[in-house]
Image (cartoon, rainbow, N blue to C red; front, top):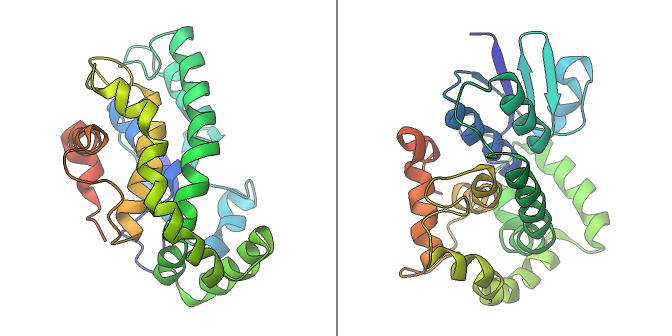
Length: 229
């Protein structure tokens, strides 16, 4: 095997939690490609591939080094065209761009406030210190104060999913009858919350939860390879 995926983990290196890494993990599973996961903490990211990146995921595929989950998906479709497509053509790429923008602008900002202290508490001590000193300036307040705002975010989070909920009442996946990379984009942040936080993000009976469970079962249960918090 000559593929290595660098994946962000907490103190427990067997529990990758980055939403962007999970997009790539399901993309690789979608393509049926084997890979080795190299677990890294926040403070180890600058050491990846001799300082090649400041973010994960990063995929080393033989001589190719690819950064960013969307770019990795594009690369996988180009490099392995004989395997199931992640986009189903240019229209699927365009759709995925929109879904990613929606996820980044709507889901991620809400979820990070909801699970912020859970993320912090899952980290090794050195990474906890880095996480606090890097995130508190971004928010302009302490992690604990941000977490207080997460209480309100949790109450309103379900409403943010209404466009997805309406769609999933008509079809099993965002991609239609079968999943595409657009599904993995939205799966990523919800898997992030599932792995690091015991909070209930989705209520039973929600079509989004039913979809999320289907995504967890995809590719021989790849999403369930890491248990819930």
